[in-house]
Image 1: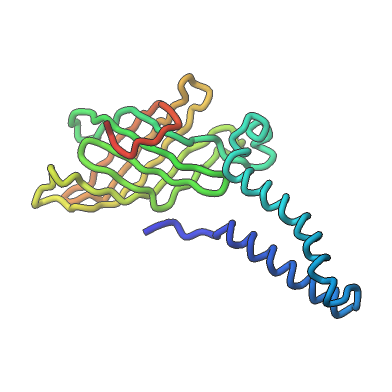
Image 2 (image 1 turned 180 degrees about the vertical axis):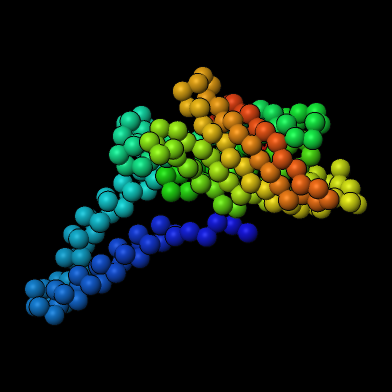
Length: 210
């Protein structure tokens, strides 16, 4: 499964194309332009649309996490920057030994995906969101995920795949910034739950526990 959301990129491309079509029809119907000169007019129109499109792509991928955009984050509802690898520990509420735990966040202005890795398995986010406090000064990474137990430790009484939900509050002004929270699962034969504490390590994603 995966998150089902609007495809912003396709929508922008579609709207741009439709605007060119509508613009062309209007020019012809009201005799503003002749058919033979329509191509040249649309070319000039394209010179206006193209920079706007390029600016949007750059903002979605890069500009949003710069200091300038983050400084006006509250006004524009720009999300905090969670990109990269976070390492720490996971403590199960059953009293077992803490495990080394890692999440890796892939993020743009409009997309968010979380992968996690532990000594017993790994998971991929299905629905990933960033929630805020009422004053929008505190943020929490929330994600529903599907996990899978590592082949080497699968037990006949354990489900190979299971689902879970995690909520991690961001402490972005600590050095390094941290994520602290909890999780729960529907793992069989008994549900599991516990706490997680992570520190940001780097932008580099390794896609494994190490």
